[in-house]
Length: 542
Image (cartoon, rainbow, N blue to C red; front, side):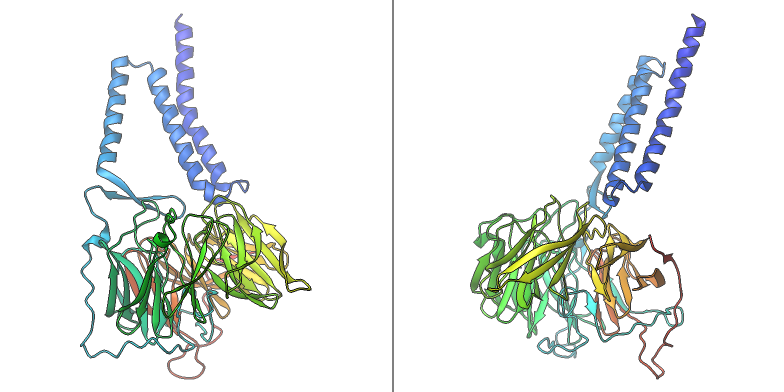
């Protein structure tokens, strides 16, 4: 009898030791196995941890051999402790890999504590002039061409000789909007308390010049509060899409409202789960935006001067990307990344020119990349992957679309992909990748920068990481070489950066900053030596 009891005790203790070991092995497998998509690793890790805790609790209650009074007392303490933590702490947003941010329940959102925007009118500053766009300006989401490509600037590769210089850094309202820059002034959207605002700042000083606000607030616990879209500056006017569906046209000199439309209310549509995030597409006499949580219509065009509706179109629910203007197969068209498709529309009347079925019940945020030869590249995270499309024109001018290749890698979730010399570069579920355009094969993968953003500046990639760092990486298909980095912000940084000449504007949902980056200008005391770089990490072919 005594031997049997001893044997059962040994079994019980082996179970106690085996549960954490099995859990550790499962977590190592999930974090390292290629069969597991990157976006699944953190949720699976959470699941393994939860199962481990439950198994340990079951062992304690059923097999520990302690008196039942002691077991139930410990269980009661655990229940009270978990309930107490839940009563004191709330989840205040998630990082891109589903890592939670916590905040005391009695503390209001950070933007409620911000001071009211004080404008610099009458302070001797120059007139806000947004009517004329220069080559160095960054007038819209992802820059002048909407491709996340900056031309006319050659960044120095050696930041140890002359590091980036901070011009200003200050608190800002909540939201994931980026900056648009014209004429030495930068415009962005932010949430301050119950007001969703469009604010104009001086580029070099950070002083506010004008502010416009609407009495609305968008709240979403996992993605965060506030506006998502970046304003578009066009011919002296600012076009801004708010998170609740307010489309405003503002005077660029004063911020006064020229016209405004509630696009969701007038189409009787609900908002998307994570809010309206499309940046307005402005061209000719049109401004085009995607709509709400309905299959028809999904796109709408307005007269940019008056706000009068021009056309509405679309047969699939929109997603979170912005409409993009492109010329494919010799024809100008609007590309729209939707919930389960990619579609093309005639800019004049919205008529659908072609549609490619692209299923996947996930949020698709990354912009389409128009390419030479009538091709377009699209990418999405959460296991969807990427596709290269070929658009061709028939004898009667009818357009058709075909799939060139489709891959599981290059899963751009919140960021955008750039193209250079036959190769694509982008953050795939937080890891930088290079993909050959002709075949779709991956050349290299490395550098865990999180769900940040990428700009192509000449032959280098300017990467803003999810953690607030700015990293310079060579745009080289042979290998990815990290050249330099510095910490620009603190906290979760999903917002797209803006580069106007040598001035880099970065922001997140708490602070904004402007940095002067070292550039190569040829001969002169203000230049950096060309051809020098400091090599950090190297990401070779994989």
